[in-house]
Image (cartoon, rainbow, N blue to C red):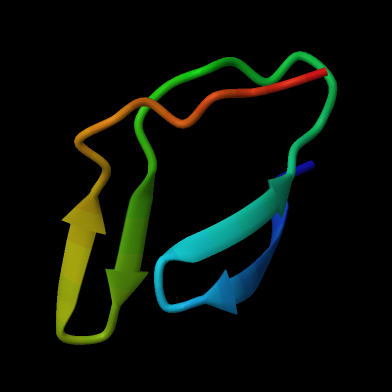
Length: 45
């Protein structure tokens, strides 16, 4: 099962991740480019 997400603003993506998910980088992909986070995405309880 993957994560579900909501684009809350131009600078904020809210995600719900499955149990067992860990902190790490995130990549956002669009048809003509992609962006990898320079700060770790933190999984909070």
